[in-house]
Image (cartoon, rainbow, N blue to C red; front, side, top):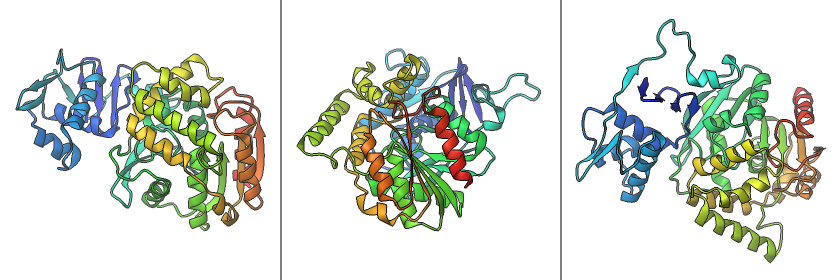
Length: 402
């Protein structure tokens, strides 16, 4: 169903909110809350109604409920003072008061395509977002796009299926892969469109998220592409399922996280970054997040830097950002490397500002028969136009076709 109010389009099938032609990423609970308010705009929605509709009847704190309502207001240009669209009735609940037009889809014969289609590079590259459930009940969002041979991309830090698809940071890479492959990717727990409120954020949980997506898609045998943290998750999956993985492509990966590969100084650096994240992540001012952006994209253009700053704030909470980062800093897959029995391609930028090249050398040396490709450049997230951009795709295509 499509709901329109003011400049906003709320598409429940695609789970998208648009302001004109601009996509507004929302975490799943905020999206569900907004949809429930719009669908029940004829009456006041009580706290109990929201708990049942959005959280399945689970008990959540008053602050959590308030923060989700505030996030929904912000997404549609409202706030708690003006209450132009979402009005609070003390001790009663909240009510959506905007004028809404409703339709099952675009009008027959309409000359304009939907905002999502206009934003995509090609109508053939419409991604289909679905949800599956991990073994501990966590909802994991995954997307499929493209019509070629399958390529599964493991989640990394941080992802957002919708926001990445539009971002000048991730869009060129994702579109290029989807033009060649049937690309399947997902948001790991704690960020993006997957559940944010989760008890377990750990390396083992990340591997279970990938296992859940594979089970939901029904894939039997496929190549697996990992970037950054996704390399370690991909290796663990391949060790446990050697008959399921045909090829491993590992870009920007590490053998050991920051806290595991050095002495007290490395631990102190990790703790310092976590402290910055805990206190500055959610602020409108991007100064704190800029520290991470400068590591991931030291050579990024201003537009790419701005998008990456926003991605960090919009894809997860400050607390989850700390938990996710800590889990990655504690990774050590040294004992898994000799057990990899899958053709493996290791790719790394020589001057990667986030993960040292020595980690890639250790990855390739530890996996029997692995091929190491060294790219020029400093960006941890490879960007279109980087010195190694075309070689990355050429090497991947040749390796996956072998």
